[in-house]
Image (cartoon, rainbow, N blue to C red; front, side, top):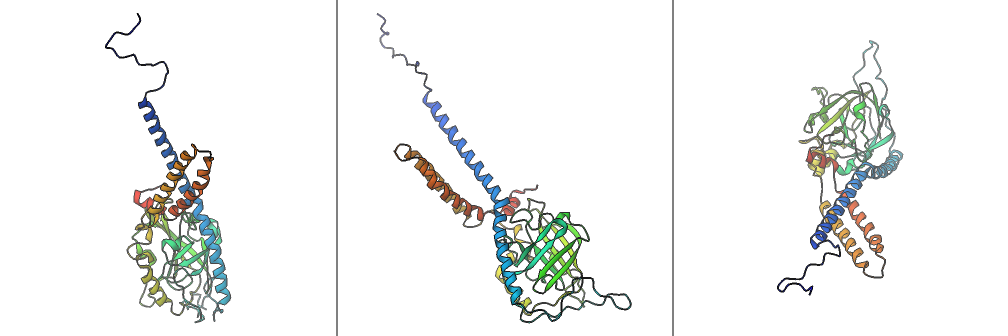
Amino acid sequence: MGAEPPGEPPAADTGSGAPPPSRHRVARVVGAVGRLMMTSGVVILLLVAYQLWGTGLQTNRSQDRLADEFAALVDQTPATTEAPTTTEAPTTTEGQPPEATPAEVDPTVAPPGVGDVIGSFTIPAIGKTAPTYTVEGTTTAQLKRGGAHYPGTPLPGQAGNASVAGHRTTYAAPLHNVDDLVPGDEIFFTTLQGEFTYAVREVKIVEPDEVSVIQPQNPTPEHPEGENLLTLTACHPKYSAEQRIIVVAELVGNPVAQIAGQAEAAEQTQELLGEDAGGGSTIDAFATEPALTFPGAWWGLLCMLLWGLTRVMALVLRRTKVPWPLAYVIGLPASLLVLYLFFESFSYEGFARSVGLNV
């Protein structure tokens, strides 16, 4: 009496309230996806923080070293035989300015090589009162250090179109607010040949392949170097590498002569840097730079592997008497170190160009 009919299986016990196994699997999958998304979000935030602030710290350290290098060069460089003019050019008795005559420079001054500091500039009109030291070469490695001088163009203060590139959003952003410059604003450039003043003539936007902006402007048979200008180039708009912003400024006063051997040194630099020298088919290397350079992808994979091992170690330690947070104490610093190396290989400009980012 009360027995179940023969042939029928016993009724399933549902009184425990335990969810079916399928729900456990769904919960585990959802939890894993959630953790993955949270981890990805943290990595993206760290990348943004590194690009906006971490790169600036790196550039500031480079600027300190360049300041010391330039000070040492100044101490070693003899004075020029004729001081360069940095104010308005003198006038003749008829009231007309005479033809500019470059000042002579001591032959012991050495022309710059790749990565050598050439001087510094300030732009008080946009708040850039601290010197931004500039190096020879416009590769991404040189641009990370501050300003970057286009090899093959005159040095600032010399006759012709001296051209300098810089970042607007990362690596201390030396040219961050150049779009606020107006005609007449002054740019001050100091080199081993003296201190020079440039007055802004115009600010314009061009495509990345408009290399004519760093070439001689309005040359003549008598003056093949063209007008005495300073051209600043940077990506445009901010947080994008779609176009280039160009600041053209005119030298106030007379130029100085080129350094002995400067042309030959510039040719060697251009041969060494190749397409990254700038002025070939594009204004700068950002037009072709990939978002990730070697060995960046490998650092990324190694970081994921280390973090995965850290997670597995934490799960294993939970079943032992060893405190499981020890896994994160060991694995987190190692993962962050490798992640930093991954960020070092990442180019925001290259990424922005690849995805067509335009902010």
